[in-house]
Image (cartoon, helix red, strand yellow):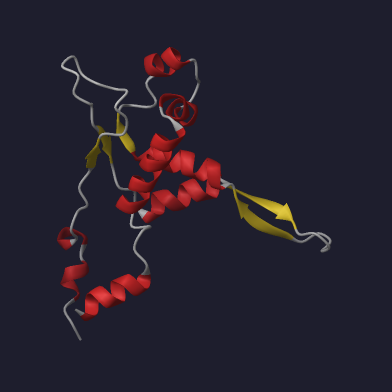
Length: 142
């Protein structure tokens, strides 16, 4: 049996925050695009977000039977806003400047659809959603 010490929290490799230019619409005084800071989320945090975005819906043709249904758009909005460290999407002044009341509305006002989609993709990659179990098996074989 192998040594389990590699699995101890103190030995776990920490994922670094990602800094990326999300939109060229935001630049400093020299015209350089400002990078956003993105943090990886834990599975526990992701599960909490999923739970808030899941509702029980009736199954057609089955009386009193319901199944969970994830509101994917709401989930992705909450995933993105939980991941963005900078800019602070919960800042009241920033929200007021766009005329919105929450981080999920703010991010969608700040970015174009393509920029929002690209940010969402980068966050999902950072959280490991782009690598399948089969990919990990192949990597372990090599």
